[in-house]
Each structure stands twice: as structure tokens, then as C-alpha cells.
Image 1 (cartoon, rainbow, N blue to C red):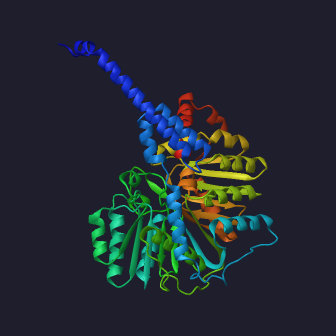
Image 2 (image 1 turned 120 degrees about the vertical axis):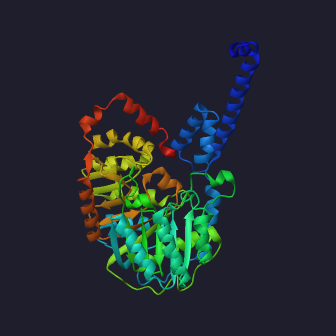
Image 3 (image 1 turned 45 degrees about the horizontal axis):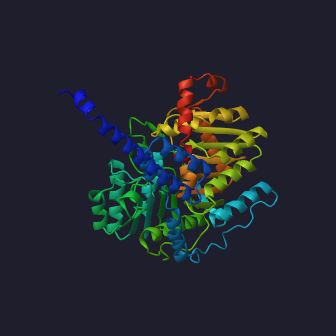
Length: 489
């Protein structure tokens, strides 16, 4: 008897099976939609995107929502608040370095300082030495120098740490310093650094290094949730030298991955009072992950001025109604009077930031945007391109980086204010992740960032508005299809 004959003889049972699956799928859909609508503080666009995904893709949409869409913001917010309360700030001793005003005659800068202070929870500090690093190999070399020079403590916090040659070499250096008596604490994200297994971590523990996982999750489902990740990159040596920015640890970040090619990233080396603010971010995250309070003097030594830069550390988290980097990006763009220079590796902007960029260009501000021409996540590139026409019609100049992979996250306003950090120009960074960065109130550093930006443009291709309108319909369809998922990318 043939398979077709067998199927036909039992067609009623097969039809009922299909109907049962269909009904079960949409019962599950109704349950999940209720869950989506009950999620607090979710943006309307994100809610709509998830409801459409669940309706159009029964079962599959539910699985995607379980992995990407379920946030546990309230629980995490409570834990983060407990960490902040337990750690406190009385040990920072920054009163003589904090500034409550920067330039009374510049109302735009003062408004931006006031907003940043409110959302960051700290004041700008003077007396900092800041170096902008654009070569990833040099960045890693300076981190290794700081590790070798450390006398008391070394704190490392990373989203991605690969167990490849680069990751192993730096790990072994930390092991060496731990055996020499330096207190080493190592904090990594449970998803971004999921490949750090027992074999990699065992020699670190045997050397006395304290290891903690940020957001490992309490259940299997939580462990594999894409949302609410710790995207920060922080290194602090002796509470005196700090590093933060966009670069993770691994071969690809040194340009050693032939598929990705040259890696263009931006990082900061800090000395001075701002390092204490960066250390505060680490100790709160450490308490969040371990319950251990770090307030010793070896973590917070006496503060000394090391330079003349005014800097302000910003840390954001996925809790509450105000998202620090979203607020700062929005305010900075709106305050710009002459020029906006923005570089970002993932460009899938929330609608308020699209409007802010449009309005800036329409009121005569020169707006230059540098984005990745290709990425390890092609969906974000395609979704980002769906915004090009709207922005270019307002006068925004858009460039796509061609030499390799752009991973920088920098913003410069009017040649006097800058932001360098880990936050991309997308919903995930601005709303769903734990991020860190530094606002720089300094014309010299702004000029350095602008010069680096212009150098990057020589390795980029400007998107021509006329040619862009001629692209085939199939590309437009793909770009707009991915844009539907912009709130959750």
C-alpha cells in the first residue's frame, strides 16, 4: 500500500490533527499576547511588533518571545536598587573635584550637564586625564601594561571574553598577577561570554581570582534570555587607572578574524576622579552578582587630579521610566547648534532619536552619521538602512564603513562635548542592556574624535540620496521587513 493511499484512508484523523494543532497554537497565542500586554514599561512599537510576531508565527513566535521578549525588569530593578543602597557613595570623596556648573555662559552645555547629572546620578569631575584609543591592538597593550603595574587590585568586567588565544593570554596574565598577591576580580556576562567553560575558568580560581557571572539567570529560560545583558567593558587597576568603551576581548577585536577583517573600535583610558565613578559602577555590579560589598581603600584610594579634562561617567540599566543613554543622546542632539558627529556599530534607532536627527538637520545643523557597512548581525544593517531615506531627505549625511567592521560608539556635539562608551544607537543598548560610557566636556578631545571620524570617512562610502532611491524593490522589502523587528533587534 502506498503512502498516499495510507494517508487518504486516514484523512479524517490527519485533518483533525491539523485542526487541533491550529487551535492549540492560537490558544497559546492568546496567552502570550496577554503576557505581552501585561509587561510594564514596554514601548508601544515593541508591543505591536511582538503581537504581530506571535500571531503570524504560532509556536515559533512564542519561542522567539520567550528568548528575546521576556524582560524581568522589575526583579532586576529591585536587585540593582539593593546593590546601590548597600554600596552607597560616601566612600567616593569627590567633593573637591565635582562641578555643579561648567560654563554658565553656555546655556546648552549647562542644560546638557544638568540632564546628564540627573540620569547618571553623579556630577562631572575635573582633574582627569583621558586618552582616546582607536587602535584595538594598542588598547589591549595598554590594558596589559596596567595589569603588570597594578599593586593592589584588578577589576575586569566584560560582555564578551572569548576563550581563544587573545582571551587565554590575558587570562594567564591575570593568573600571574593573582599569584603575585594582587586581588583580581573577574565579572562576565553569562550569555555574551557563554563559551567560558570550567576548563578556562579553573586555573583562574586555583590562582585565587574571584569570579562572578552577571545575569546568569535562575532558570534555563532566564539563562538564555537575550535581554537585560551586561554590555559593559570595564577595567580598573588599583582604583587609579580605568578603561571603558566598545572593545571586548578576543581575536576578532584585534582584526584576526578573516571573515570580519579590520576591527575599528573606540575606547578610553582614564586617570583621575572619573576612575572612582567607573569603580562605583563595578562595585555595584559586583554586589549585584555576588552580594559582596567592596568599600576598601584599595578599591577607592585618595583622589588626585591627573589632568585638566572634565569627565562624567554614565551607567544605564533596564529599569524605571528614564533610560540614561536614550535621554542623553536625545538631549545632546537637540542642543546641537553647529554639527553632530555620530559613529555607531548598530544603527536601529528608536523613533524619538530619528526625529531628533531630522530636526537637527532641518534647522541647519550639519549632521554626519557613520554606520557599519557590514556586520556580524546583518539583520541590524538591513533594518538600519530602512531609515536612510527619511534622514537623508532632511539633510543628514550618511556613510557606511568599508575597510572592515565598525564597532565604535561615539557622539560629538559642536566640537565641545563628546560621549564614548558601550551603548549603540539601538533599542537593545538604549533600553534593554546595562551600558557604560563617559561624557567629555573638552574641546581638545572633541577635536580628536572629529579628526578620527574624518579619517574613518576616507575608508567609508557616502550613501548617495539619488542612487539610494533607485535601489531595487526587493531590497526595500527586505529592509522594511527587518524594520518591523526594530524594537526588539
